[in-house]
Image (tube, rainbow, N blue to C red; front, side, top):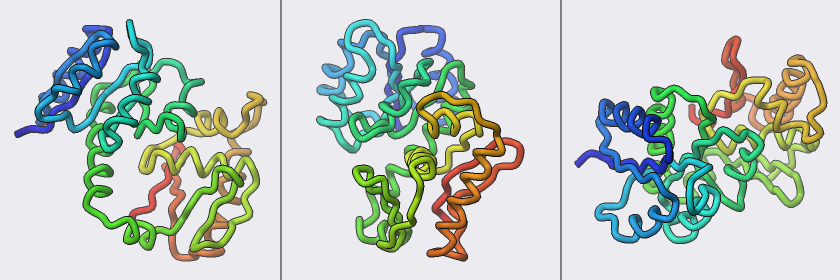
Amino acid sequence: MNERILIVEDEPKIARLVADYLTGSGFESHHIEHGDAVLPWLDKADPMPALVLLDLMLPGTDGLTLCREIRQRWPRLPVIMLTARVEEVDRLLGLELGADDYICKPFSPREVVARVRAVLRRAQAAAGEHPAATRDALPLELDAAGWRALADGRDLGLTAVEFQLLKVMMQAPGQIFSRDQLMDHMYRDHRIVSERTVDSHVKKLRRKIAEVWPEREIIRSVYSVGYKYQPEE
């Protein structure tokens, strides 16, 4: 049976377009337009969907509330948020809500399919691995309360900006972030900085990681686009 994707989107044209591309890529899909119908449908779903594409702005129960409820009741069900509100990204990927990824509107349906595949791969890998094995493969941990990053238990000594930069990229492994996107996360006061400033922070972050792992490049450049966190070899 093909994996089923639940599309929660109140714009029928967008939902149909995404559903068509998912079908063409070997998935099944089910569409719900109203936020109030999502949790009752999930309660009775058989089988459960493999992933939920969840719009932020919905009639009835909003996407943020639904994401929180899904995390509490079905913690292993992956959620990708669809949003036109970039300022909500921190909350979408933060500890409070824990969305697995987000896609900003307008988007390409091909991008949606690619993100769905990537999140499902991560979810399937996590389900099949022992937690200790994952930690040994890349023992890089973030201490959000202390604003610290620990590599093999060693504090990397990151600045607040470097910590935020690493945190954003680690929350979406494999996703390419443009310099503009990273700037939005690095500076909460929306100051104007140049792209060279981002490059400088990335260079310093890489240097600190290389002090512990000199042969491992986990912050990778994507020529003319930006950067991504890629822990896999």
